[in-house]
Image 1 (cartoon, rainbow, N blue to C red):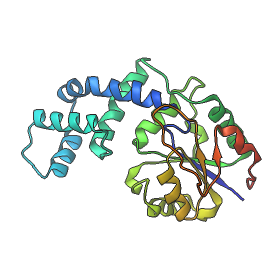
Image 2 (cartoon, helix red, strand yellow):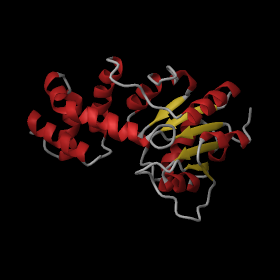
Image 3 (cartoon, rainbow, N blue to C red):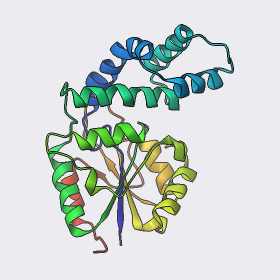
Image 4 (cartoon, one colour):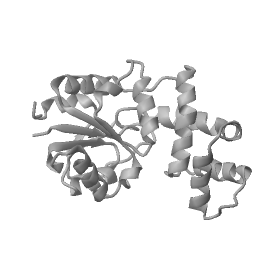
Length: 230
């Protein structure tokens, strides 16, 4: 029986194009100016630590962050900075967080049934909360019991999912993980979680090469047939 759902965001609950074509370009275009006009000492020092160079100037740090952004690096200081820039964008009404209607309806139903909901994404916890707080359906953050990012470990490592299960306080096999990424699903399954592959067949999405060791769904509608501990 499933007592909790752990979901990815990009390509799973939300469109790949929203993240890749809206959020990332928005942050990239404003990165340099934001770094020049805000006190970001913690982020700058984190970049210096990762680059193993305590003498990096502000301009050199900006160039490192821009390069990481162009390479889509999953590093904490970049994710933290992107979250701050996105926060300003949401607050200014420049965009709203995209959520598939089927994901919205399924998450709403699960929340109403008392199923615990969690997020595990490579985006920072702040970025996750911002997206769900500013959807076209309103603020959905009260539905979620927790948000996890890569401070828990790589999404491709089974230990990360074991750590999340311990944090949630449930046996791994009572947690359902949803993702569009085959390697993430393999890692979660190795950790003992139940998994569903979300294959929305979006351009630029991951390919599921048959056979796979778990069911594939096209939308969250299919979750209705699963048995939850209510």
